[in-house]
Image (tube, rainbow, N blue to C red):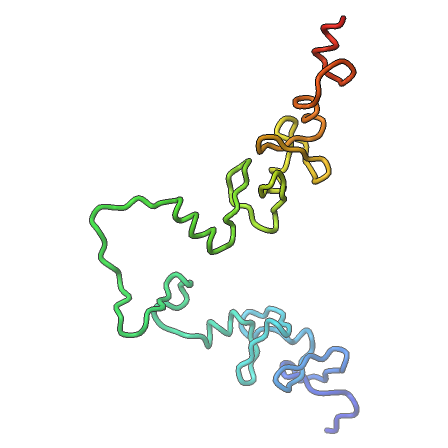
Length: 193
């Protein structure tokens, strides 16, 4: 039967695919609604599709069906060995007495690996680039970048520092500013009355 100007046939449902709804994969046409994984039926796009001959899968199902098989696969990266073939990758003998895990060395290794070596002076936790605010020459979390006395959130225009601590301008003036009559010092006002 002749194809009277309709379009290509869908590789999944074999009905006509018109240009506006056509998705192409491996020189075959699909409807947008037919462009789904053959195993889990999830919708696919150009970034999630994996084709095997005439079948299309999501990357996860493709890996399960056609990926590497055998001991160590499918258990996560922790079970895989990167030792060259021929070396024993089995369990290693260890001392009979347990060693305490050093949290400081573990934290140091993680900070080197993930770039979080800066520590917030307020909470002592790692400060990463996405949450870093500089004040008093030190890195702070956005949530820790507050006045130590009143807890007010600070910005670069409202922050003052003394001895490594952050203060809003009002608290700084009250505690470290000039004292005397006319400067807002309550103690001086009480003495005068």
